[in-house]
Image 1: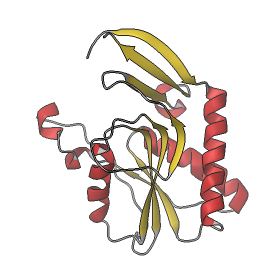
Image 2: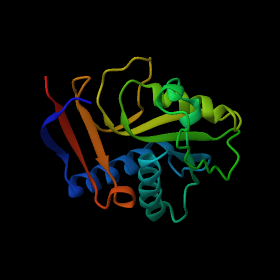
Image 3: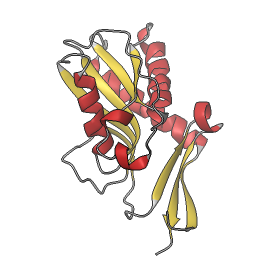
Image 4: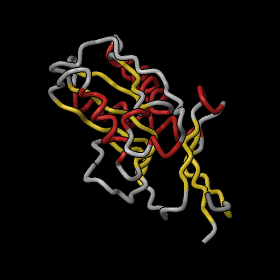
Length: 183
């Protein structure tokens, strides 16, 4: 990884809260009573984002939208090059996916390879009627024809830059920052 030369705040904790409020409202506007949908967070930070969205939606609906977590480590096309012992997280989907609309939730959309792996992993659980994609940050630079349905923030970056999404449950605080690499 190249040395970082700058760090830019893309979302403060307050801006992230407002963004999550907006995304939850977009889901409610699209899905009405939300019967037949479920949120699936991609490990790690997508799980926290999915939980935050579900909590916001529950306030409006009076009930909780089913939420699960998905680890895609063994479905990645590059996992064998990373380590001989990859760190595999928890997959927890305690509801049937058949006939449901699933909303995959991730923190950052970059090349599209994580989403491709998530779609492959979901196939092991059955056949949903539809899969949508919600990302907190879309940073462009796609390598696969994958497009999000819901986006919190669009931020064009250079390939060598990094976008860090921070969530309270994992990082101790919320926010989004762009870490620029040396040219």
